[in-house]
Image 1 (cartoon, rainbow over the protein chains, first blue to last red):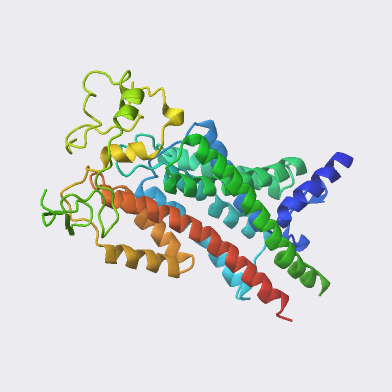
Image 2 (cartoon, chains in turn blue, yellow; image 1 turned 90 degrees about the horizontal axis):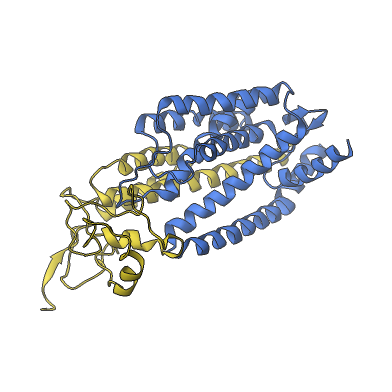
Length: 226
Length: 173
């Protein structure tokens, strides 16, 4: 139990970087409130699932983006989260944690699938390695994401696993974005690119910490005080 | 060579000095000086039959691309090799298709950047279309840049909207 509380402190700190962490909009696991709200949990569960699939299938170096039909399908499935967020913040609809979780998942899943070839694509080469080989693979990734989110929603996933998934997803996303920018704009060796990526990711985390300390957390306290 | 002599840029189609190595209009690299020692040290021992001459700038569009990821090709210096080498080998590859105008590129980039959310999604789809142009390096290059820009803008736009919404909610009552 003490271990869980220690983990909760660490995960809550990581969660405070990007999330308001309002308890009524967050899910529970093992009697503890998850480190981020349901929508963010869905987003980072999706990012984690897609990155994990690409890592397991050794596609983190893939060069060719998904086909047009798959890209359109994935981007269309990102729209519900935008609508859910905008319309509920504007007061037009009432949303709930289930909708937040699953719309967030469909938003997060395509990000790694598009981000990986964005870094490796060569305008002058053959781009032999596709990020996804078939629709079946896309269905597998989405199916795995849905199963993970269903287990979170029903409290079947342990708190530590859910928190670790969020932290891994956040770190993978930040480092991959920085890597992509550096890779596309730098002419250095691989080691130089890796070093710049690590330094850039650390800087991004510091920026998020400052943003959270001076904007997010004061706003959260205002909301909680009402 | 006569300094008034002109040639057409293979990327944007503008008339440029014949001895230019970089297009002054679109900034595309047309030629880079060959570092022979680099080519000798890095590739001499590994190029098999048929791969000779692929470092030449005279490489025509019908010749095979050299990407370092070809089956059977092992580059012992991959770890230390700068990424620009790959580009250097292939800058002369282009199709007969008319390249995208700079104005159109700027217009598309601005359009996708200025419409939060939907603009970036449309940008991602457009980028995939350009990246799928099988024989046009200009469109493919623009497509990959558009994809990176729209993905990052999309994530930043979502973060910005979220912070704005939270600010709005905090001061609503």
